Length: 298
Image (cartoon, rainbow, N blue to C red; front, side, top):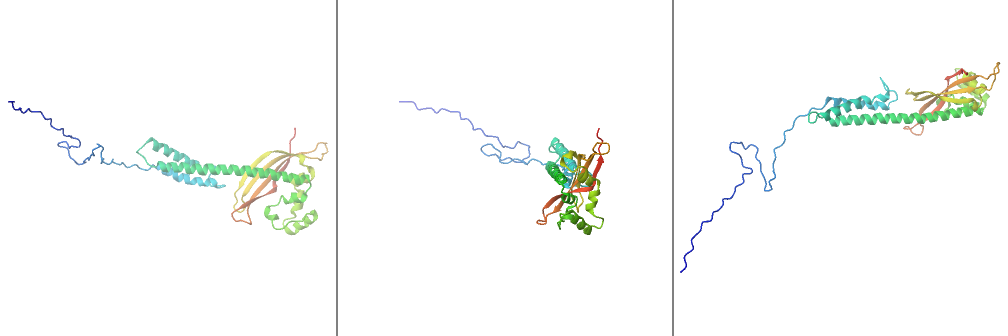
C-alpha cells in the first residue's frame, strides 16, 4: 500500500507594486501628474511667462523709417532727398542687433525688421529711380543739343529760334516759316520787344548764325551742370553742356576766334492733354543763361 503524498510548501513571491506617480509622504499634491500606461505625461504644468518690454529703439526706428518716403520727393526740406532713409535704417538695425543680443529680455524685433525693410525699399528704390531718370534725361539733352547744331548747320533760323522759346509759347499756334513774317508775327505777340531780333543780336545768336554756322566748328567738352527744377508750376530738369567753338571768320591778326559756349537746356514736364495722369517732356534752349566767352587757347 503506497504512502500518501505529503504537501510541499512552495514559496510565493509577492507582486511588486509600482510607485510611479505616488505622492511622497509630507509633499503637497498641489500639481498632480496623471500618467498613461505608456509612461508619457498627459498633463504638464504651464511654464511661467515673463514680461518683455518693447524696445524703444525699435519703435523709434520704425517711426524714422516712415520719413524715408521723402526720398521720392525732388527737393524735401532740411537736407538731400537721398539721406532721408538713413536715420530709420541705422536706428532700426541698431535695435535689431540689441534685441538679438538680449533674448527673452526685450521685444520688438518685428518692429525693427519692418523699419529696416521700409527704409531700404524707399531709399534704394528712390535712388534707383533718380539715377535712371538722370540717364534718360541726359540722353534726351544730348539728342536735343544735336538737333540744335543741325539747325545751325542747315541754316534753319526759324527752327533755331523756336527752340529758344518755352513750350507754352509755341503750343497753340504754329509761327510762320518766313523770317520777315516771323518777325512781324512776334512783333504783334510780344510787348517786351521782338524776340527774333533779340535772339539774333545776342552773343549766342551771333556765334550760331554768324561766327560758327557749321556743325564741325562745335566740339563737345562735357556736361558742366545738372539741376532738378522743383517749381510746382514748371517742374523739370536743366542741363549745361560746354562746347569749344572755332569760328570761320578771321580776325585782324589772322587767327579765328575761339569761344567756350555753355548751352543751358531745360526740360519741362507738362501734363498730357490726352491723359491727366501722364506727363510729357519738352525741351528748349535758354538764351540768357547760356554763356559765351572767348577761350584761352595756348
